[in-house]
Image 1 (tube, one colour):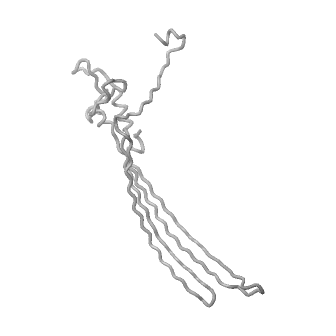
Image 2: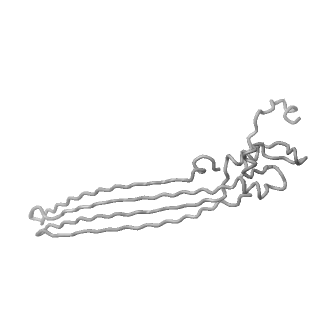
Image 3: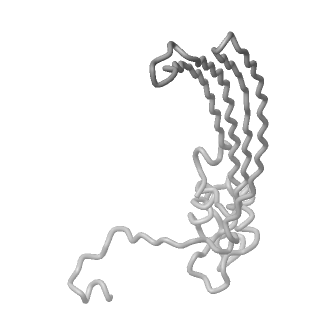
Length: 178
């Protein structure tokens, strides 16, 4: 009646946002492991100095994040029908979802969300990544010739680097996590 009495049209859809705090805080557990190997050669040719080095390194990263929900399962838990075998109660419409443990969720209820419903929608997010780097450096320096004020030195160098990054997340995170 409030909408009708205001003279405004009744909305076809009302959006409602709510953080599902019943899932607990969002936690991130990370593990990193890195290593680096470096080798080099230095030499002198008269007054000229030559330096050549190479390195390879790798860093691996893994993260598990909790406190998220599976969007598809949440959708199943919100699409309800009257339970014909339990008068006054509701159940998930999808029989497939019910067979997977779907439990009704009432986001407005004073009782909160049941443990069974939380278990059905709860999801972990996993991320794995690695960075590999190959690098070669070369440097040559020494005097070109002598001027009245001293030697005019020359320096030349080159650096080559190749980096490769791989990252992957679990299949659920790619499609259905919130």
